[in-house]
Every structure is written in structure tokens, then in C-alpha cells.
Image (cartoon, rainbow, N blue to C red):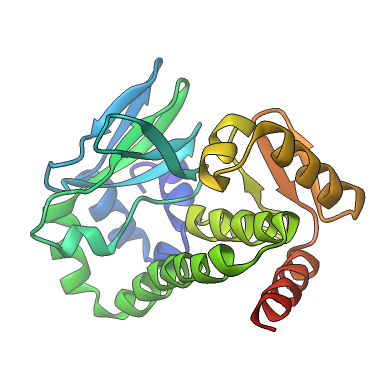
Length: 234
């Protein structure tokens, strides 16, 4: 293989996990590794979707802008995660901005070449749909999030949703958001956020770290969130 290290990384992404050596080389040959030393916009809202980005190190943020110019981070993609697949097949421009944070490396695959590659490998489509479908289901959980009157349980749903959207499939996924970014998404005061996070941590459901929140037990946190949704419905 021309680049065994890069091929190993490529296969760590679920969609590409069973690619042959030749197919890995084919995809790597049309891709590039992009490095960012400072916070950099790599795709602006209003631009056509031009690449699929796979995070090698660092993180990629999806940022939304309000009509009055306010900025909000709505998703964060860590190592092994990808930007949206489905968006590569849309003719409409991006509605969100993608930003690489400092010390980030991305494997950038041009949209044109990736679409052609998938046409030659139709067996990959179910994996693509499964990956983005999981993100779509996570977004649907926003309904339960809005309806639930209990703030700590509402935050549990939000944390699970962010983890699903990020593509982190580990047993203890991390939500790579600062408290300020999470506060914006949760639409609550700093005091309320800290109180709710403390409650979840005391229950052993999460563990707070610098710039991240680790979900200690996905099943337990999910059960907590679902119990909240049932309570809100009644």
C-alpha cells in the first residue's frame, strides 16, 4: 500500500471499514491531509458542499448564525468523525459553517470524487445512510427536549443528542463543548447549567473535563432521559 498509516485510519471509519487495499489507495490518492494551526473556517454557510471531512486529530465545529449575527456551535466532530454525507448529494448550499479548531488535522475527500467512488461501491450506501440516519434521529429528540420541563433531564437528552450527532460511537462518548457553548444550546443560565451538570455527575451519569463532558453510561443516561419524556407526556 502507498500509505498504510492513512489506510488504517480510513478503515477506522465505519463506512470504509471493509475496503480492500486497492480501494483504500484509490480514495487516498484523490484526498488530502489538511492541517490547521489556528481557528479556520473551511466551509462557509452559503457555499456548496465541496468536501467530506474526516477528523484525524483536533475537532471540527458546525456553527450556526442568527439573523442578528450571533454565533452558536451546534455540533462538534472529534477524531474519527465525519462531516455530513447526505449534504454531498444536495444541490443546495450549506446552511451551516464548518470551522476547524487549532491543532486540527482533517482528511479532505472532494465531493465529486467521493460521489463517483460510492457509485462504484453501492454496498457502501447502507452504511452511509445508517450513519447520517443516526444523526437525524438524534435531532428528532429535540421534540422531547423542548417538551420536558425538568432541566436536568432535558440536559441529559441534549447531551445524548450531541454525542450521536458527533459520530462518537465509543462506550463512553465525549461531548466536546465548553460550558459556554453548552449553555447556548441549552438556552439556560450558567448557574442552572452548572447545577444540572452537577446533579448528573453526582448520579454517575457523566464526568466533566476540560472542554468536554464524558457520558459515563449511555444506557443509564438514555433511560433517565426517556423516563423524563414519559413524565412530561403525563
